Image (cartoon, rainbow, N blue to C red; front, side, top):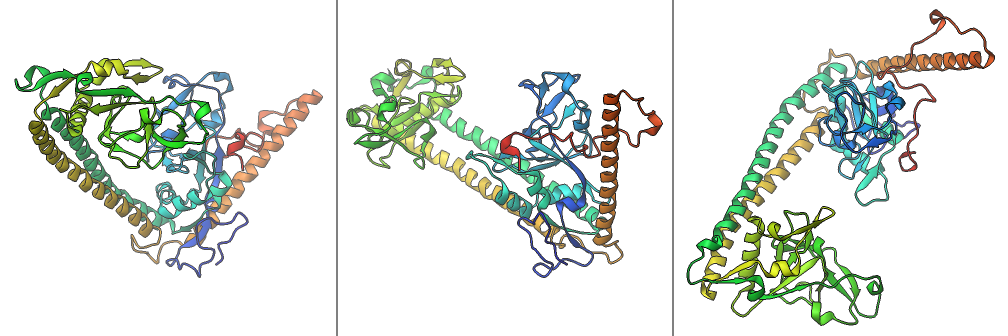
Length: 508
């Protein structure tokens, strides 16, 4: 049996000879298991979520995380524009057609849902035939083969956002089991994936504990100022070293004869400098003032309030690097080890000390040079600094080892999830039953439902056209008994002419 179609199949075999299906299964495109589909509509919205009594339009984030999150919505500005045909109902299968690279095409099966929520222009509603198990279909849309097919077809000019057209989604080829086996597969996946979900939750909780542990280690490394030992010198950051703000960026320096790399706030994380993405500017003058030396501590000057002052040590790689005015540089004095300065600043970060010094503009917190200079800074003897640095590194290493273990556990959990879905849709998760009605019969039934729905749509279009002609001619309106069909519901694809077109970037 050939599975080639007019629309073409993305990321799937083109004939049964390439991949042998279990007995009773059949190849089909997504469009061949659907009675219809709806593209959402664009509405003018307020950024705030809709109140329960208001109409709202769903955001793509409502479909991103594997469950339908009805609270992820925006309030409509003009309720007179509401078309109830776009209202989301329990049992709907929604697909995100515009989303991040990771989540474009993400499906979700709607459970209980509040009324007055509408499909957006960045989402689709798929309506499978009555013989297609909806849980099975959503699991298939989440399977590795489908995710790969969507990734191959998704387009977009942004590095992070992608779009997938309705026609590309409906052209993907899928192996269709008999209806009874679909239910068995969905039940088995429910059970097995629930166990993996429990493991994922345990990993999440363990990560939170590791974060708390790391914070407590840093807080315990250095006491509060009132409890500093008597032999520690109580100074300020300005007295312990030199503090400077980086060079401002300017259009005149985008090009020039002496281009050099520089670090900015996007490169500096806690105890880590990311050099995978460095920018350059012309340093024909002033490079010496802003050149970084090994042991320099860089702190975020502008960040979100809880991250401002986030510090990391520059260790000389790469060489010849400067820094911008989104960063502050601390260069330790003779009686301060760079590692001790990093430890002090990390402790201040987790103790919320920097937050007491910031000034916030447009949701960005700024730590000025003058305010950092005044922050308290303890200076033990050099031997004591070395001892405390070594002890703290050892304790943090154990927390880091826990993170490594959790990363491996998470990767293993994700691999098991992918393998489980792949086995399910290769017919190896549950046994086949020769008494099941073959998938070919299932597809014939869906085809009959689709043809009946199309006949209903055509009748509705004819009735609407006749009504318009009667209105123009002033003729007597037909009686209600003469109307061939009622208005479409959310379970029936919208008549031609009522499907909305999307903005250019989402059209085929």
